[in-house]
Amino acid sequence: MRESAINWAFRLLITVLFAFLILPLIIVVATAFDASGAVVFPPEAFSLRWFGVLLESPDWMRSIANSLLVATGTTALSMAVGVTAALGTRRPDGSVGKALTALAVLPLFVPGIVIGVTLLTFFSRFDLQGSYLALVVAHSLWATPLTFSVSQATFARFDWTIQEAALDLGASPTRAFLEVVVPDVRAGLLVAALVAFVVSLQEFVMALFLSGPDTRTVPVQAWNSLRQGLDPLVSVVSTALLVAVVVLVLVGSVAVGVERLATDA
Amino acid sequence: MSAIDRRSGIDALVERWRLIALLIPLLALDLGLFALPMGYLLRISFAGRTPGGAFVEGSWSLDGYRYVLDSALVHEILAFTLLFGVLVTVLSVAIGVVYAYGTRRASGWQRTLLLSGAVLSLFTTLVVKLFAVVLVFSPVGVLNDLLLWVSVLDDPLLLIDNLIGAVLAQLYIVVPYSILAVYAVLSTLEETVVEAALDLGADRPRVFREVILPHVRPGIAVGAVISFTWTVGAYAGPLLLGSGSERTIGVLVSELLLSRFDWPAAAALAVVTIAIVFAVLLAALLRLDSGGGALDA
Image 1 (cartoon, each protein chain N blue to C red):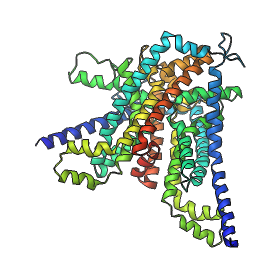
Image 2 (cartoon, each protein chain N blue to C red; image 1 turned 90 degrees about the vertical axis):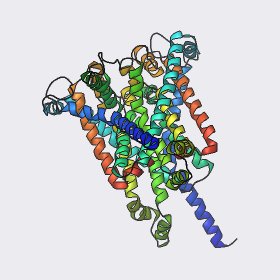
Image 3 (spheres, rainbow over the protein chains, first blue to last red; image 1 turned 120 degrees about the vertical axis):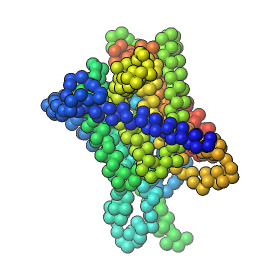
Image 4 (cartoon, rainbow over the protein chains, first blue to last red; image 1 turned 90 degrees about the horizontal axis):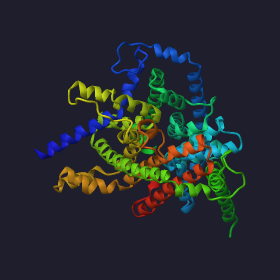
């Protein structure tokens, strides 16, 4: 009797926590479809009006293009660095491997504002503040530990004797990698790339410090208008961002399953 | 030594160099664009302050640190930030453990739903989350509307523009990390261990205390370290959902840097923040060395 009461209370607690985690996001989405110029919930009249307004706003469209550009650059850089490093530490080399992993993971524990301020002072030395390069580097510092560790986990699941067999049969190391290793670890590498893309897409604090008027990303643009007051366009953009993330997470889940997505990343 | 031995010795050497070459991009990124800029910041923190620009090029001075040591405002903000960090960390880890345990006990679609919720929240930009917090928790927000409508309350609760707002905002940012850090460890616990404990007569709360909690300690440590270091560096949450009394080091650093152009003071304060963060990281690593590394999770 007492046991079942505790169980029941526990389930209720989990439901409440889940609701607090997710319902606010659903409410944001709902406010995007309201006709009025104020942000209201529950929505009073369904309308796609604000989506049209967004498509015609040069500032917002610019920020969307900036976000996609920076996220693509971050994905490319952090995958190149993360995958090579994961291949380099494939055979655990004792203390060297540990030190490298620690070095790679370190930026993830440094608050965004500190990295933002640090890179802002550093890049302004070379007049690179506000450049796409500054944003890509900053985001790669956070994305690389993730591409690195996801790739490491992926390669650990691969049976490397197959690659050795390909080498013994006369394939060059490059050919063996591209034709034997890559097809097998494709799903894992796709997830690593998705994670990098999403990390860049959603990063805000570093972008706030490092972006200029022409390189503002979506979160920075949203922050600027949020500081002025509640704006239905922020609801619309938030909805677009959420949909993008849901789609990317779904793609990742289909590739490797949500369980592995949650524990690897 | 035969020819074949020598041959494989050379191969091993080539292989070794190839492995080292693969690590160069990582070293270049983390040393050249992380460690080096950090060093530059450290250098600026020892430069002279000047009213006319960012800092005095080439000068050496302790003025930045003197400002941090002498200013009562800085002390107040430092004290608040640390307290804020501890408060948010405790709540974040508690919620993370409960949610992860609930996820583990759920099965089928319920587990998938709970996990997806945490992953979605993790991947949502913090600006959207803060916007959502305003919509839900403001005096005219959804929660107050609901509570007033069902007549639980006569006056709206003040949940934003104060400490509660700042804590709520920060929790939305760090809780997903706590959940997933704990869950990653919890998912490695064999179900048979839990069943054995139940068969031996322990009830669920006792299993939680004596089997689950000891097992997830590394996950708790990772969640706590992330929550604390990120909250010590909190900027957007306290700024948007706190009031003037919830100013963190991050807010002050950006003010010094961007509005007052006092780079040495800003750099010195940032260095102090990094020192706090690294001290906590190091302490966590040393304590965890006995029970599995934080980096494995």
